[in-house]
Image (tube, rainbow, N blue to C red; front, side, top):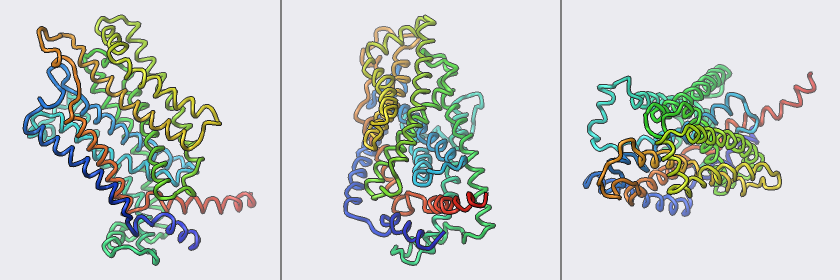
Amino acid sequence: MSRTNRETFLRDLTPEIEKTGRSWYVVFALLLLVFIAGICGLIHQVDKGHIVTGMRDNVVWGVYIVNFIFFMGLSYAGALVSGTLHLFKTSWRAPVIRLAELITVISLAIGPFFIFFCVGRLERIPYILAFPRIQSPIVWDVIAIMTDVFGAAIFLFVSFIEDFAILRDAENLQIAPWKKKMFRILSLGYTGTPKQKKILTFSRNVMAAMIIAIAIIVYSVLAWIFGVTLQPGWHSTIFGPYFVIAAVFSGVGLLIILMAIFRKIYHLEKYITLKHFVNLGIVLFVIAAFFGYFTFSDYLTKWYGSVKMDKILIDKLFTEFRTYFIFANYIGILTPIIIIAIPRLRTIRNITIAAVIALLALWVNRYIIIVPTLETPFLPIQDTRHDWLFYSPTWVEWSLTAAGVAVFGMLFMIISKLAPIVSISELEEADEKLVNEPVKTRES
């Protein structure tokens, strides 16, 4: 790698590490206010109990579980995308792979908190580890999530080592002394020797393969929590692959959105190009088709089977929840397919819009999987107040949902001040391959 190219990458990709503009503080302050509002909602819930939420005897899960499944799906999708791009040495991966890796770790850090918000007796949580019942799918999920946290964190750190070494050795980088010290510690003495590079490459390949397997297993386990439960609409053998496909669908959508945001804010037009949006858009197109197929198969078998409670549930989806159903399973699936299928529509703006719609549709999809089922129990409660039978989220639940999104944004903003969002080492590797390719052609 030539010194000139490295200096170019450093100049283009590290301004946010060197200095912080006023707009960064304004956006961070706004997100912090949203987070504080969520903390106020949590304090109110702890003080008054779950009566301040919309959850009641029938609908014991609500927006909190929707958020948990949604964020965990984003994390597993980030792991699948980043692991696959790295393992198969995809030529265009360099500018986007780190965003996928960060989606994995940040979503994993946020998702499990929504479980805590849903638990009435938080002091009993340690009992899951102290006295686990291996027969319980909840325990399976705890074990799987903990494994995924460690695996994803290690994979992210290993991918950062080369960049930390580059930032440590950069002479013209004007950064605070504490950041220099941090880079020196986190680079673990990496100097780029052939032996070190071989060990690092092997480690990343192993971790990439592992997190792909872990992501599939973990989200399948999460799906089995529903699939092994005798509830209308949940007791299904298709839920494992259905949830995995849905996770990748939402994760690719979020990756496209983050690409558009960071491309605009940090002026990365030279690195994140239309080609990256089109390539990921095609992935979104394929996954949307698979997701549509699984959705159709799931509802078709329930409807055709004519089981009484499943029929009641489907009637509810097509009446009381028809707006949610149409958006999640028609608009959310067809919009990305139409935009990507027509070459003339494949612009950065249109692909980003399709990704936003897909991401929102997946959240709504999770909502209509959980809430209508819990509003359709096998043993309905008689002579009960109407508002106790049906679920409507309160400001407390929405404030904590917004706080989760705000934390996601804040963590991305903080990390962008400590390390490049676009991997310098990946760009160098891609540049070297591009330079050496004609030489290999001539030799052959």
